[in-house]
Length: 364
View 1: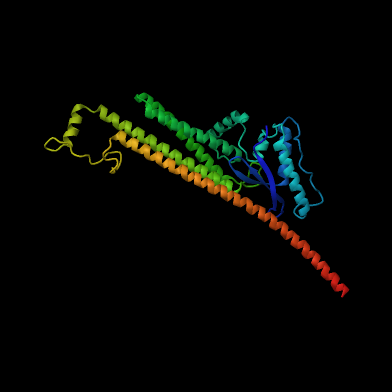
View 2: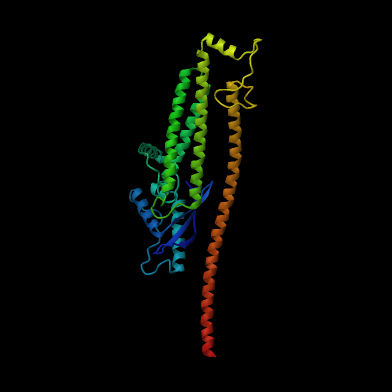
């Protein structure tokens, strides 16, 4: 099956370390997003060895270019360009090969920071449970995405339990649904904490060489903030439901004398009820003063639904802005590469002009 992933290496750069090396900018284009990774030549060699070992010793359909022992890519632009093209061809050959064994390996997906394949869901589910039990931060970029998907599933389960609780008719069923929803929310809180700590400790990618890109880090921070707000909303809804049930149970269990005393306290001398001045559970507004408890809950659900719709509209606008920003970034990268080539051409022409001037000086 043909891969829906498009891979290219449009440009290279040089590291700012004391011992400089060439960095290859890998652009990955997925159906819904595009992002860039930075790798060095040794990462490709490590990838090739890992692919071979993880597919029962079978070598991939292509090999990375050989190492140069006498010339460095940092001092030879021609060698850097030649290696860039060879590495791009290497990745594209594996990506488009009909045999997808190499594309389904953890090494390939970890190298390109891709989500895990469905064939390894069982193993990742076990890893997620192990991480939750240990409470350790998630510092592997691929595992981070797996845990985030598990977090979204956990929040969805909590929302379903709250819906079941709202529809339950017996107190026992409501209690069981509340317990399951609370358990899911506690687990979601632990996952959010692990993800947040993992983002703070991200120093290198899965291959221990380069950091995640700034854009990818911002995207993951936005994902964490979004799930935090979703979890807080579900917790508030659960607390409101529990408080309402407690109030209803108190009223239902009150004795007739207590009810009569309550009514007499809130009555005028002519026997008419006094207007309600407020609820115990919150400050009254013009919208809620005329509603009973069920009406207030329904109003809260309506307001939350309207807020969710507003958030969806805002999220769509943000996604459009992000796509535009990524396209601008890609264009800037291309222009940067073209300017680099132009700078090299100018240096080469200037060198020729200097040589010509020296020859003219000797002639004159």
